[in-house]
Image (cartoon, rainbow, N blue to C red; front, side):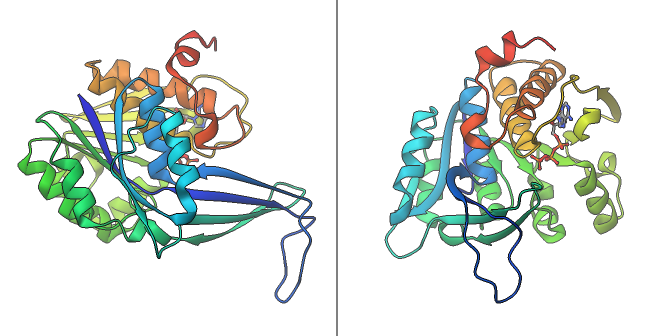
Length: 289
Ligand code: ATP
């Protein structure tokens, strides 16, 4: 089976500075690093590293070929990533001060210009039972969900970055919804319904260092997090999502899929970085907590 992931691809551009810049200030950065990021790319990498056939549906600009190559190196199927001549790759320009505080400027770039022909071309290859995964850093999620329902795919959505209108327009199509504690509260405020009342067969609420909650058929099951010393929680949620869906795609029952995803996410919080440091299946299964 395969996981088709309609998702963002970003260049994460880190500038290390003595302090966060003030209005009008010119500041010299002491160092610069460029990483692969974007919630979509992170989830594709996580799913591929977990052993799934992860097909990324997305777009980069002419300045983003390196990102496409890096995804390929991580085992992601990149045939359905469009190269756009006139639009830059999505970017997160991140200034980090000496205390680790940051400020971020986001450019959506090619993530908001994924051609509909790219989406249709990718899903034309999908088979019933494959997964369509989406997050909220691209456009056309409802359109993709409709196409996926007609194709009898398992439709999964990560409600981040949270936007009430974006979630509610795909809710009727979803088989699987994943959100963190804050997003779960925001969704409850927006819809007036508890996560159990949404009518989505599988809902997972990630609870950071407390673990995760699975809501299924009117029952809730809590999974405590693996004990680690957290260094950097960036990308933990994306790693969890890619892993849990990859494990489900391989036929694992949901409780085992969640446990594997929590192991991967626990390892992830012990590392600095995003897509580039997502652990592979061997590391995850061999890790001792
Ligand atoms: P992010 O946006 O930072 O990627 P998130 O808010 O989407 O994360 P979280 O709920 O913070 O998601 O974390 C996802 C999963 O990562 C948790 O369900 C848990 O399994 C694991 N995790 C996060 N923080 C810790 C921690 N301190 N110790 C162990 N596991 C953790």
